Image (cartoon, rainbow, N blue to C red; front, top):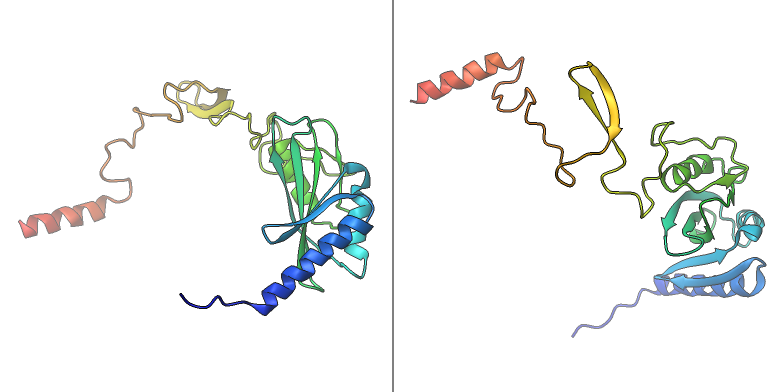
Length: 220
Protein backbone atom coordinates (compact mmCIF):
# COMPACT_ATOMS: atom_id res chain seq x y z
CA UNK A 1 0.00 0.00 0.00
CA UNK A 2 1.22 3.47 -0.85
CA UNK A 3 1.86 6.15 1.71
CA UNK A 4 -1.00 8.50 2.55
CA UNK A 5 -0.29 11.95 1.15
CA UNK A 6 -1.07 14.74 3.60
CA UNK A 7 -1.76 18.20 2.23
CA UNK A 8 -0.42 20.68 4.81
CA UNK A 9 -2.39 23.59 3.32
CA UNK A 10 -5.67 21.64 3.46
CA UNK A 11 -4.98 20.62 7.05
CA UNK A 12 -4.19 24.20 8.00
CA UNK A 13 -7.40 25.42 6.36
CA UNK A 14 -9.51 22.85 8.19
CA UNK A 15 -7.83 23.89 11.43
CA UNK A 16 -8.72 27.54 10.76
CA UNK A 17 -12.33 26.61 9.96
CA UNK A 18 -12.59 24.56 13.15
CA UNK A 19 -11.17 27.39 15.25
CA UNK A 20 -13.58 29.85 13.64
CA UNK A 21 -16.52 27.55 14.36
CA UNK A 22 -15.52 27.38 18.04
CA UNK A 23 -15.09 31.15 18.29
CA UNK A 24 -18.44 31.85 16.65
CA UNK A 25 -20.28 29.31 18.79
CA UNK A 26 -18.84 30.59 22.07
CA UNK A 27 -18.47 34.34 21.63
CA UNK A 28 -20.88 35.70 19.01
CA UNK A 29 -24.43 36.48 20.20
CA UNK A 30 -27.33 35.01 18.25
CA UNK A 31 -25.59 31.82 17.13
CA UNK A 32 -26.97 28.64 18.65
CA UNK A 33 -24.92 26.27 16.49
CA UNK A 34 -21.59 26.60 14.64
CA UNK A 35 -19.81 23.52 13.37
CA UNK A 36 -17.77 22.07 10.52
CA UNK A 37 -20.06 19.89 8.41
CA UNK A 38 -18.51 17.97 5.51
CA UNK A 39 -15.55 20.29 5.60
CA UNK A 40 -17.66 23.46 5.50
CA UNK A 41 -18.42 26.00 8.22
CA UNK A 42 -22.16 26.03 8.96
CA UNK A 43 -23.81 28.49 11.34
CA UNK A 44 -27.43 28.35 12.55
CA UNK A 45 -29.25 31.29 14.03
CA UNK A 46 -32.80 32.61 14.47
CA UNK A 47 -34.80 35.34 12.78
CA UNK A 48 -34.56 37.78 15.69
CA UNK A 49 -30.76 37.94 15.69
CA UNK A 50 -30.24 37.17 12.03
CA UNK A 51 -29.77 40.68 10.62
CA UNK A 52 -27.27 41.88 13.28
CA UNK A 53 -25.32 38.64 12.80
CA UNK A 54 -25.12 39.03 9.02
CA UNK A 55 -24.00 42.65 9.44
CA UNK A 56 -21.33 41.50 11.87
CA UNK A 57 -20.07 38.78 9.53
CA UNK A 58 -19.80 41.28 6.68
CA UNK A 59 -18.19 44.17 8.54
CA UNK A 60 -16.06 42.69 11.32
CA UNK A 61 -12.36 42.76 10.41
CA UNK A 62 -11.86 39.19 11.62
CA UNK A 63 -14.39 37.78 9.15
CA UNK A 64 -15.10 40.16 6.24
CA UNK A 65 -17.64 38.05 4.35
CA UNK A 66 -18.07 40.72 1.69
CA UNK A 67 -20.06 38.71 -0.85
CA UNK A 68 -23.38 36.91 -0.76
CA UNK A 69 -22.86 34.17 -3.33
CA UNK A 70 -26.43 32.90 -3.21
CA UNK A 71 -29.31 31.97 -0.96
CA UNK A 72 -31.82 29.18 -1.36
CA UNK A 73 -34.66 27.38 0.37
CA UNK A 74 -34.99 23.80 1.59
CA UNK A 75 -38.39 22.30 2.39
CA UNK A 76 -39.08 19.93 5.31
CA UNK A 77 -42.91 19.64 5.28
CA UNK A 78 -43.10 17.63 8.52
CA UNK A 79 -41.61 20.46 10.61
CA UNK A 80 -43.58 23.33 12.12
CA UNK A 81 -41.05 25.72 10.58
CA UNK A 82 -40.78 23.79 7.37
CA UNK A 83 -38.23 25.93 5.52
CA UNK A 84 -34.51 26.33 5.90
CA UNK A 85 -33.25 29.53 4.28
CA UNK A 86 -29.58 29.02 3.46
CA UNK A 87 -27.10 31.85 2.85
CA UNK A 88 -23.68 31.16 1.31
CA UNK A 89 -21.15 33.91 2.04
CA UNK A 90 -17.63 34.42 0.70
CA UNK A 91 -14.76 36.36 2.24
CA UNK A 92 -12.66 37.70 -0.63
CA UNK A 93 -10.14 39.09 1.86
CA UNK A 94 -9.46 35.73 3.54
CA UNK A 95 -10.67 33.27 0.88
CA UNK A 96 -13.14 31.66 3.28
CA UNK A 97 -16.75 30.57 3.01
CA UNK A 98 -19.53 30.27 5.55
CA UNK A 99 -23.09 28.96 5.37
CA UNK A 100 -25.74 30.63 7.55
CA UNK A 101 -29.07 28.86 8.06
CA UNK A 102 -32.32 30.09 9.60
CA UNK A 103 -35.78 28.51 9.67
CA UNK A 104 -39.26 29.86 9.02
CA UNK A 105 -42.78 28.81 8.04
CA UNK A 106 -45.25 29.75 5.29
CA UNK A 107 -46.42 33.01 6.90
CA UNK A 108 -43.53 34.38 9.00
CA UNK A 109 -41.18 36.63 7.01
CA UNK A 110 -37.40 36.52 7.13
CA UNK A 111 -35.50 39.84 7.32
CA UNK A 112 -34.22 40.87 3.91
CA UNK A 113 -30.47 41.36 3.49
CA UNK A 114 -30.72 43.42 0.29
CA UNK A 115 -29.37 46.48 2.10
CA UNK A 116 -26.24 44.52 3.03
CA UNK A 117 -25.84 42.81 -0.34
CA UNK A 118 -27.96 44.36 -3.15
CA UNK A 119 -27.71 41.14 -5.16
CA UNK A 120 -29.89 39.50 -2.50
CA UNK A 121 -33.01 40.91 -4.19
CA UNK A 122 -32.66 38.39 -7.02
CA UNK A 123 -32.12 35.44 -4.67
CA UNK A 124 -34.92 36.47 -2.30
CA UNK A 125 -37.36 36.82 -5.18
CA UNK A 126 -36.40 33.35 -6.42
CA UNK A 127 -36.80 31.84 -2.95
CA UNK A 128 -40.21 33.46 -2.64
CA UNK A 129 -41.24 32.33 -6.12
CA UNK A 130 -40.16 28.70 -5.66
CA UNK A 131 -40.91 28.13 -1.95
CA UNK A 132 -43.23 30.94 -0.84
CA UNK A 133 -40.75 32.25 1.75
CA UNK A 134 -41.53 35.88 2.62
CA UNK A 135 -38.84 38.53 3.19
CA UNK A 136 -39.65 41.59 5.29
CA UNK A 137 -38.15 44.86 4.09
CA UNK A 138 -37.75 43.61 0.53
CA UNK A 139 -39.22 46.35 -1.72
CA UNK A 140 -39.48 44.17 -4.82
CA UNK A 141 -41.29 41.05 -3.61
CA UNK A 142 -42.39 39.83 -7.06
CA UNK A 143 -42.14 36.46 -8.72
CA UNK A 144 -39.09 36.08 -10.93
CA UNK A 145 -39.33 32.67 -12.68
CA UNK A 146 -43.05 31.93 -12.92
CA UNK A 147 -45.89 34.06 -14.27
CA UNK A 148 -47.26 36.93 -12.19
CA UNK A 149 -50.61 35.15 -11.85
CA UNK A 150 -49.11 31.85 -10.71
CA UNK A 151 -50.53 30.83 -7.33
CA UNK A 152 -48.34 27.95 -6.16
CA UNK A 153 -44.71 27.24 -5.26
CA UNK A 154 -43.02 24.63 -7.47
CA UNK A 155 -40.15 23.56 -5.18
CA UNK A 156 -42.30 22.71 -2.17
CA UNK A 157 -42.31 18.98 -1.50
CA UNK A 158 -46.12 18.87 -1.67
CA UNK A 159 -46.27 20.44 -5.14
CA UNK A 160 -47.49 17.75 -7.59
CA UNK A 161 -44.99 16.67 -10.22
CA UNK A 162 -47.53 17.23 -12.97
CA UNK A 163 -48.44 20.74 -11.81
CA UNK A 164 -51.95 22.08 -11.34
CA UNK A 165 -52.60 23.53 -14.78
CA UNK A 166 -51.59 22.94 -18.38
CA UNK A 167 -51.46 25.28 -21.34
CA UNK A 168 -52.36 24.19 -24.86
CA UNK A 169 -53.47 25.64 -28.17
CA UNK A 170 -57.17 25.10 -28.88
CA UNK A 171 -57.75 24.64 -32.62
CA UNK A 172 -61.49 25.36 -32.42
CA UNK A 173 -61.19 28.67 -30.57
CA UNK A 174 -57.81 29.48 -32.16
CA UNK A 175 -56.26 30.63 -28.91
CA UNK A 176 -54.04 29.41 -26.10
CA UNK A 177 -56.12 28.11 -23.19
CA UNK A 178 -55.21 27.29 -19.60
CA UNK A 179 -57.08 24.45 -17.87
CA UNK A 180 -56.71 22.02 -14.96
CA UNK A 181 -54.36 19.13 -15.62
CA UNK A 182 -56.15 16.06 -16.94
CA UNK A 183 -53.67 13.42 -18.04
CA UNK A 184 -54.69 9.95 -19.22
CA UNK A 185 -51.24 8.67 -18.22
CA UNK A 186 -48.95 10.14 -15.59
CA UNK A 187 -46.33 12.56 -16.92
CA UNK A 188 -47.45 12.05 -20.54
CA UNK A 189 -49.37 14.23 -22.98
CA UNK A 190 -49.60 12.41 -26.30
CA UNK A 191 -50.69 14.41 -29.34
CA UNK A 192 -51.71 11.99 -32.08
CA UNK A 193 -53.27 14.67 -34.29
CA UNK A 194 -50.10 16.72 -34.61
CA UNK A 195 -49.46 17.67 -38.24
CA UNK A 196 -45.77 16.80 -37.65
CA UNK A 197 -46.45 13.12 -36.93
CA UNK A 198 -45.13 10.88 -39.69
CA UNK A 199 -43.70 13.78 -41.70
CA UNK A 200 -40.40 12.83 -43.29
CA UNK A 201 -39.69 16.11 -45.07
CA UNK A 202 -40.08 19.34 -43.13
CA UNK A 203 -41.27 22.50 -44.91
CA UNK A 204 -38.30 24.18 -46.57
CA UNK A 205 -36.31 20.95 -46.84
CA UNK A 206 -37.87 19.78 -50.13
CA UNK A 207 -34.72 20.40 -52.16
CA UNK A 208 -32.52 18.50 -49.70
CA UNK A 209 -35.05 15.68 -49.74
CA UNK A 210 -34.91 15.52 -53.55
CA UNK A 211 -31.09 15.40 -53.44
CA UNK A 212 -31.18 12.53 -50.95
CA UNK A 213 -33.69 10.61 -53.07
CA UNK A 214 -31.53 11.17 -56.18
CA UNK A 215 -28.45 9.84 -54.36
CA UNK A 216 -30.38 6.73 -53.34
CA UNK A 217 -31.52 6.09 -56.93
CA UNK A 218 -27.95 6.58 -58.18
CA UNK A 219 -26.66 4.01 -55.73
CA UNK A 220 -29.43 1.62 -56.78
